Image (cartoon, rainbow, N blue to C red; front, side, top):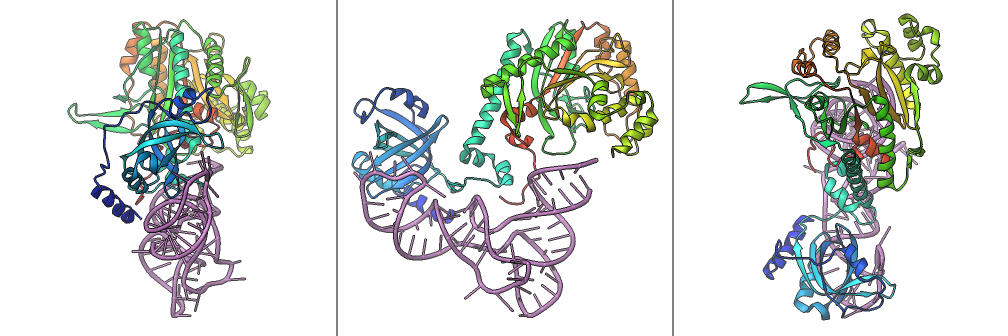
Length: 490
RNA sequence: GGGCCGUUAGCUCAAUCAGGCAGAGCACCUGACUCUUAAUCAGUAGGUUGUUGGUUCGAUUCCAACACGGCCCA
């Protein structure tokens, strides 16, 4: 197949055709044409001339004329190539071109008998040669493995995929605009950290040669962003990649995009309200509506969302009897009766961790409409401020939509003593053989000792939000180049 | 890590159940055609059936292992 095409290309070269020129300029995109022809009809090819370019997606060849469809970044347009218009030599060259080649054409516009606006070419030239054939035009490219590995083919062939990634880009822009509008400062903090902090996850490890030290790809930017709050910025955000050395699934990619933002003089309750506004705003800008459909479920971002303390959700949704909340044994029995196993860890788990596990399995999948769960146990919230009224719980929420965690926010712990104690507590629970260094981020404690204003912060999983807004079942569908094992061959 | 499913021409898929020369559409190549749009018509060509091994006179088909992928579970 490729051999055959090479022979044809050889014929083009021998005819003096340059395969990869770089001197062509366009005057209009496909989208521009729509405006140009507004209010006009018929053959207006004498009125003006345009220079256009794009990839040839289809050719209907007749003897001495042809219709082609070509595509640029804004859309697809038809062109009519006639031998009497472009001249015999150019027409002969054109007949040697393939679907997939990039061409440049000049000419005027006319409507075909079906009313379709068409470029009547008075010149055509090759702009870049495709050496391989494109996938089939009607069925397109379906094989998921090939779509992920060769995303460029997926983007060429599948318009819905192009649209999806443009939506994702608009979504990120809308979030950025929302925060900038509220005086947040966009910052970038280290991706490579000497101590991976801000979350509980296995990090990727790397080595810096000239510093002769281990570094870790960050699992979260949190501790650095809060240093910036200490530094006086008061409102900061970062949209960037986190890396977690864990499993790959329809909901997990080893690198994923996270928004984190921090606002001084705000509480976790303020952030819940702000999150409602942000999601409504972003959903409207991306999908045109604050009501979206995800995998058959209608999800409504309108109005105020349900706010439910975790204990109450366990009682109401999981059927936990309030009388057993104080008893490890009863909770473990209850978990066992629901088929939840804790592996060998249960001896080590406090009530807070058991409750959280029960919540993850029994409640989380049932939270379809946007729901804020509040009142997380301190045990699972090492960076959150202690509730003034209930010191065993944190001033924290998580947001669940369509049965998944989408966001996590809390009033920040800014008491350095309490923070240090919680780090120590966390260290005591680290597994042996863990690759992560068993050290405390002393500089973060030092920063807190210089004083951090009362602050609330939140993280939002950008990929998961993109899944919601694009109705995608797998995270791989919203990441341009998801991670896969190397293929043996293409 | 476990379970189920998949891998056949450039692409989308048949044939496998019940072993017997591996097929179609589109793409490609040649020819005809100046309003087609999944163009049409005629003809040609295109395959190490994911890899390795086993059973068999004979394996795309049955068996095993492996690789890669999808979905579900942990």
